[in-house]
Image (cartoon, rainbow, N blue to C red; front, side, top):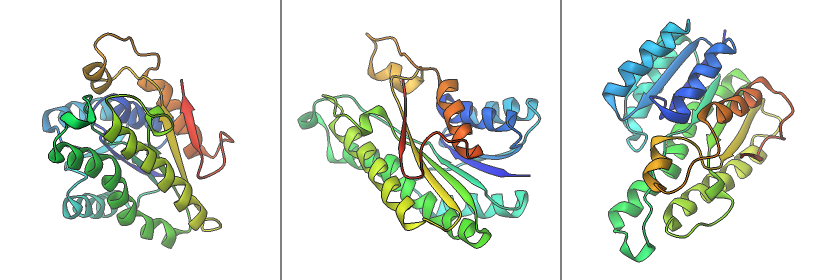
Length: 228
């Protein structure tokens, strides 16, 4: 029986991924997020689907907190077979109107959070000789958009990190992918684009993630799957 950890998993794409994994038979799930109330709701939804769900109020920017999350998941669920780095933030504004604090939050959550969680989980996967890491990037990790310069830079970084790490891990049994959703119906997207309707549902992204986890031939490791 496999275990998955999904960051930013209390709502939106992250919760859709956790639910889809549960429906695919990965019923030992750990979810982390910064919003405590949403975590309680997510636990109820996941357990109603038949999963054993652990929820953790933790910020991916806090290395020690995520180390505790991963340690507890290992202890209570046995191991981590699948890591989905989904936590993300965005701010839409002209670059020169952004503060250094905003740069830091976006890069620390979207990029350094991926580094931290991967660094904590990867040794365990290598010791087991197998595992899957899926990094949720964005269409903005393939194409630059105005008023999203720092967000785009962080997501381009996730795509580059994924490609590089997959090459390092070739032959190890650990597969690494990126998923690049287009405009997805999430709270974050609607806060950025009040004037545009999203084209993608969180469940569309979740289906792609499930295929990658299952080893279905979507793309080779290191590649980014675009979802539009």
